[in-house]
Length: 206
Image (tube, rainbow, N blue to C red; front, side, top):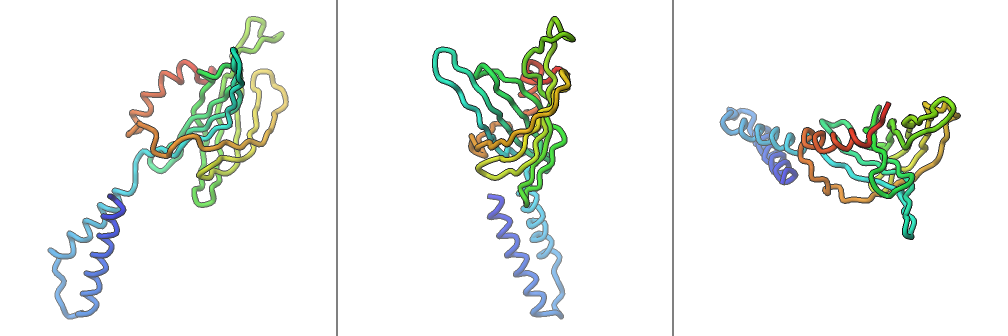
């Protein structure tokens, strides 16, 4: 395990330095020190994953009956080269194939738990005087809040960029819905290829 290797490397490095300090007149053997330092560097690198699944949080509720309806939001997060990436989903009708959007302007302060992002969605078709034949909705969601292991909590603002109505702000709490290791994508390229057809079908139309 990377953690065990790192700990072993640290202990070996400490032992080597202690030996040098005890006998300052001793000539340091590079053949002895270099492999230890190399192991230490490799172990540090092994603990840093290039692509990592963080989890899924949701507050979606599904009604019972012959014609069930779902409402709520889903947030899925990964880290690619240390930067957060992910998707935001809104359920407002059928409990399947909801509007789907990649996160934009994502910031995550892991030490403080502060999370912020925006996402463009097209949740349905809008009919109005300006759009008699219908036009895909243009809703920008802006979230600011906190991310904890068990929940994501904060303010979600929806901005209608098609009908130009006033923004709406609500407080949301999304609960963790999956194991942190549940995602099957091992690389960023794999992840992009898997979600590309979903974005084409259900992604924002603006």
